[in-house]
Image (cartoon, rainbow, N blue to C red; front, side, top):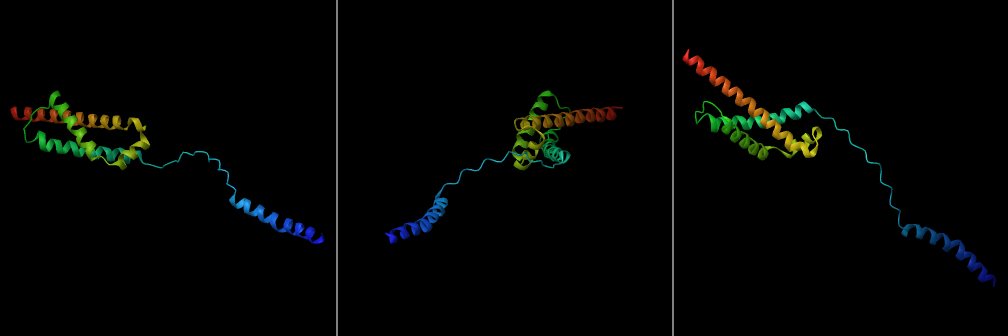
Amino acid sequence: MDIAIVLCVAEAVILLPLGFICGNLVKKKEPALPEPIQKEIIDYDEDAIIKHLNFVIDESIDRYFLYEITPKRIEYINSTDENKMINSIQEDVSKKISDQLINQLGLIYNEDYIGTAIGEHIYAMCVERIVDFNVNHQRYESSMQG
């Protein structure tokens, strides 16, 4: 019996810790609690982003004048021509605008508002250029008559 007791003690001394160690290796880890969501603070230059957007729009307006207004010798841009121009510029800008610029605009505007903001910039810049064109053309016509 002494051997049986020795074996039981040996088993307890050797196998129980071994089982504990193996059990910890096999035991599934509890999922870690998610860390609190932290909003990343991004440093950006709003003026540079808007300047880039305006550059893309201005380039499209220049191209429109070059290919649509100048060759047709249009003297005055009326509301029908204005609508045609704005639609054409919107289409051109939507083809040219990069995903990077759209993402940058997302730093300034709500994601759902980006398209509207771009449309408003296009409209404002087109109207400004049309008014400038019409006023300057009228001045030119007046100077030629007088």
